[in-house]
Each structure stands twice: as C-alpha cells, then as structure tokens.
Image (cartoon, rainbow, N blue to C red; front, side, top):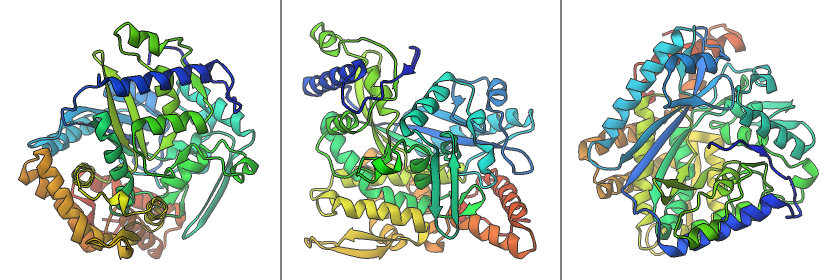
Length: 500
C-alpha cells in the first residue's frame, strides 16, 4: 500500500471522517456485489508462511532486516517482530500437479533464504511459536523497523489504556503483562487464500469455519508460550490477548475482541465487512478521500483501501479479503487457522486437506453449517486448540438426523472428512498422485496421533527426563526440530529423542 498510514480516529460513537469513509467503502462494496463486476475465479489459491529466525543454539535472533537484505527478494517481507519473516508464494491454479509444484517452490525458496540467513549466523524456522522465545524477547524495541508496526502498536495501546495481559492456563499457566503488542509476533502461521465469486463466498467461508477445529486438531504445532507448556495450539489465545484493546471492564460488557472466531454463519461477504464497521473502531487510516460511489458511476472500480486496511486490523481466523488486480475486483477467503511448519511436506498436506474439504463441504446439498450450531463450531475450535490431536469434537450425525455426536477428531477425519477432502481435490482437478500423497500424510498423523505439537512436547519431556533443566530442554528440542525440519520428512515419522 503506497499511501502513508496515519492514526485512525478511535471513536466508538461512530463520528469522525474515517467512519464516514468506511461507510462509503461499505456502500461501494454493496453496489459492486450487485453489479457482477467481480473477476471470475480461475480456481486460484495463494499461500503465505510466517517464519522465525533462530541461531544454531536454538535461541531467537532479532535480525530480520539483515536477513531480508541478504535474501534480496520481494517474495520475503517483514512481519511484526524482528525475529519474523514472511514468504509469499505467487497464486497457483488448483489443478493437476499443483501440490507438488508448490512443494518444490517452497523448498527452493526456503532453502535459499536459509542459506542467506546463515551468512549472518541465523536460520529459518517454520514453527507455530518458537519454544525458546522468552517474554523479554518481545517488547516494543523488538518490533520490526517499519512505521506501520510502530503506529499500530501505539494505537492499540492507546485504545486499551493499560498493559496487555497474557494469561493462558493449560498444562502450565503463563501470566505476563506487556506494554506493547509485541507478544503477537510469537505467533507464526500459514495463510491459505482461495478466490471465490460473491455468490459462493458465504458457502466457502461457512465451510472453512466449520472445519477450522479439525485443521487445528491435525495441524497443531504451538504447545509452548514463552517456555511454558500450555495449549496444544497456543497461538489463538496468545494472539487474542496480545491484540485485545478492550480494558477488562469493557470486555466484561460483551464487547467483541479484535481477534475472534465469530458468532454466526453468514449469508454474504458484505455481512462480515459490515460487522467490521459496526463492532470495531478504526485504528489506522490511509487518509484517502476516494468516493467509491462516484468511481462506480464513472465506470471505474474503487480500491476501497480504507476498508481493506480496517479489515487487516481485525483478526478473524477466516478473513474476507477484497482486492483489485489489473483493474478487476475479486473476493478471497483467507484461512489463518494453521501454524507454520513443521516441514514443507506437512504444510502442503495441511493445504491439500483444507482445499479439498472446503470444496466438498461447500457443495453439499445439505451443508454442514445447517446442521452444526455455530456455538458448537466455536466450542470445537477451543477444544482443538486445547487438546490438539487428542481433541473430541461435536459433529452432525450422518443421515437425516439433526442431532450431534461427540467423536474424536482423528476418527472424524479418517472415517468422514478424508474421503470428502479427496472428492474435493478431484473436483478441483488435482492429480490423484498428489491427492493421495498429501492426504496420506494427514491419515498417518491420525493413525499415529502425532503432529507437531505432540512431537514437541514428547521430545521436551524426554529431554527433561534426561536431566536437562527447562531452558536447556527447550533449546535441545528446538535444535532437533530444526534439523528434522530440513529433512522434509513429515512430522509423524520423526523420532522423539532430541539428542538424535
């Protein structure tokens, strides 16, 4: 975004120029959705991965500016923390051998970036939360050297009016008060994009929400928060609390957090953008006075940059995206559920499972979201984050019954969802060899009940049992993780011994 960002007007009353501009953007989006000017989807998918930097000792390295300078590619960008990078893969058509193509491109790009990082004594790590990160590693001085991060931090802290409280209780409890949003930088994810028509958006978004818990259950990879073993996938609670601009008394009144799962199934993309304006005061602005309705009257396509920027400060796990490419608007569902890693093969397997499953569920004659109450989907998400591969979920019974049954996530995946994902990949036109290879990784994880989170905790406890203290055990496990990550052998095949 070329415009210089300025502070938004944190104005819960709804007055102020930015709310007026956002309302104009929303009106423009509404007209666009009715005008049928959106790009016809070409089965395009996109992939972004947030990465960590660590040294050979397994400890974090705060040097993304130096590493990015060495890499010298626009495919790699800064993220919030100085220990983070992000890699963006160009959009691909979901067809043929796309999964193997993505795998090869990722391996090549990450291998190159890792070589460049090693020139400055750092390494690239794909993991949901780096286990060796300490709370003291993530303060305002550790934010990336970019004015947008500084401004976002200032605005969120001003909105809250006090320190951000991190309080997560799982196998252990971690409590910490942060004077900045920097703890958010501990959370590194995979973001899966899917371009859809306005008419298909709601079905795809609803399907993505319904399966978010299953994605977490099979893909959890973040069991440690600042050295403490908490939930199997600890990113969601950490991200929520690190971005929660609500003072406790406001949260107690039922005001929504800026990081949230949602509260209902939807009928259109417009509903999500309208919720953004209704529930969340703007934090940032591009200061642009585009009149979307006038642009439309003149035959043009509005950029709606204020709407896009506001949307980017509301952290839904499945986010709507409006974008304009070569003068043509389009909509995407951005799936933000998955943690990074453990390997490229694991990342592509997670992507294959998601894209296949969402396609199949979105096309069912009796969609799952008509049989699964939204509160049950939200409860599933929480259970999967807490328990990972061992989660027990609520799911509609097969047949015409409207009742729910409780079933283990691994049984649900193996008996019902993997066949649906395979059928969905067939509908996309993905080659059977790709389909079977990557969905086979998901099946084996479920058979063995092993994912990144379960491997990390098993290796950590084995190191503790070998006589290492907490910090040394975390570092030993992280070093072993990094070594195995580079083999690209999927995580369910890894030995648990951190010493190798």
